[in-house]
Amino acid sequence: MMNGLMDNFRFKKITEGTYFRNSISLSDVEGTPFLDEEFLPGKITTKDGSVYTEIPLRYNGYTDDLEFQKDKDNYNIDPKDLVKRAEFGGSVFGYMEYLEGDKIKSSFFEILTEGKATLLVKYSVKFLDKEQVKAYAEPKPARFDTPVKDHYLSVGGAPARLITNKKGLLEMFGEKKSEMESYISKNKISAKGDDGLTKIVVHYNSL
Image (tube, rainbow, N blue to C red; front, side):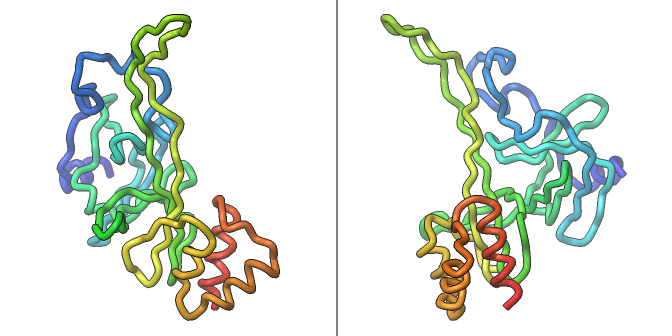
């Protein structure tokens, strides 16, 4: 269904200028902005219910773009907010609202579990410029840093909020705060990482 995708989305062919404002070549940069450099067969569901299958997809954590490939050319999915779900490589991504300070923004998130509360992961990759030559130290080349994972929680369809610690997480559960605190303590569950947070949110969704 590639042709349908190309007809219903705007798309932008990716060039090295997508990444850099100077003359650096992507081949001279260490690391990768992608969670997986390979394009993996996937499915896109739009917010109006349209479904496109057999789409080669990957996620760019530096530009926060969902990319697809056609005839060996790479493109960005645009506009991003048409995407409800993108499934590829065993992961599910959605383009969703989140809070940053008092502002509502939007980004692609990996969806770990969903229900009345939805647990999300926001990935970010930083680009680090080439370091200048220093005495007695080897210069470091330009590089993409290791992807950073931040966990967010959306309750009742509200914009997702960053999970900073167990106390902040419990506050998000509202009237179920005490019950969830007891569950976490009784079962000795860590409020960090994919596994512990998934167990906590799955239990909340079962209440």
